Image (tube, rainbow, N blue to C red; front, side, top):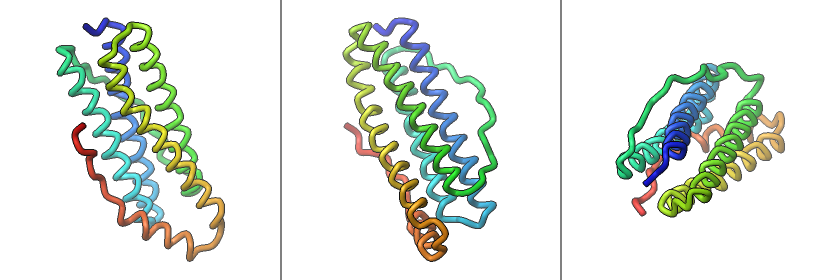
Length: 169
């Protein structure tokens, strides 16, 4: 049985995942405003992934017979100096998500809540991928610097990105 502190922490993370979607939609809006539709698409897909993560926690809480509680959220940042600045902001955000997932894992470990530990392993693996992806894109953006051809090629590449929910485990 999940204790109340762990239920509260899972609910907090679920809400933070919804907030993450909000953050990425705001960045998509910035990119759209700069006529960078590929970059906007990248962040819209990222927002879909975050909603999927939130709903994964939602379902887990329900499956464990615990109450889901939704809360309001802060306004996300809507203005950036550049696409690079937006990606750096997103990378820092993902690092915060990782910190929060680790905290949840620590709580589950301390409670010897093995089912939750197993559930959170998926999120830990996901965060490794998320951080690596943002780090790689930031390096690419820095490398292409003011090469407009390379920049627009990356924008075109990101226009092709789609969200495909992972297959059920």
